[in-house]
Image 1 (cartoon, rainbow, N blue to C red):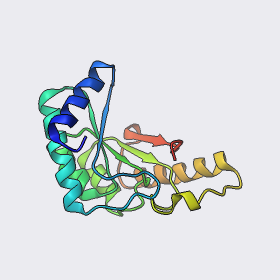
Image 2: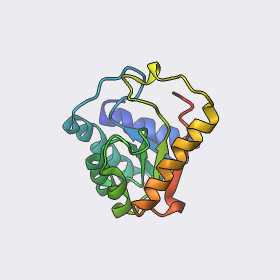
Image 3: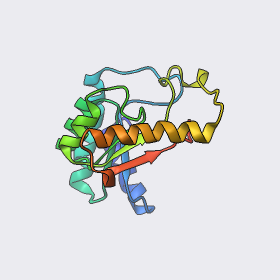
Image 4: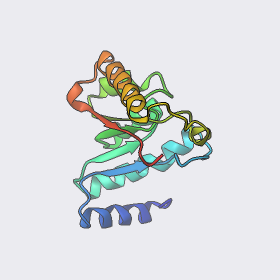
Length: 158
């Protein structure tokens, strides 16, 4: 839904179908995806967040690994930050989210979208995912994020 009208129509359709939260992302995170520039991500995300915020009352999550995008998205009306890296890619993400006072979704992922499919060997899958997520929760709390605002995602889709 690259074009604003199409993105807003999809958002309306999803809400009519019962969506409780809309997650907006400008950067593909599928395996093998190529990273886009910060400027391109901002240009893709901000107009959609603004349009959804003006038209709908549903909470808006922004899927980003960049603190700059998180800050701009919340200023544009986003309610939640969803970071597929568990806030590892950008060292400013956790302090930024703490300052913004919004919830954050911390996802488990190994490597990057370019390398994640080569990093799938686990000795104990559930334990290792749990340890990763606990470490990220601890880092979020240490950065000043209220524990009630931390959501974890085991990254099952990956």
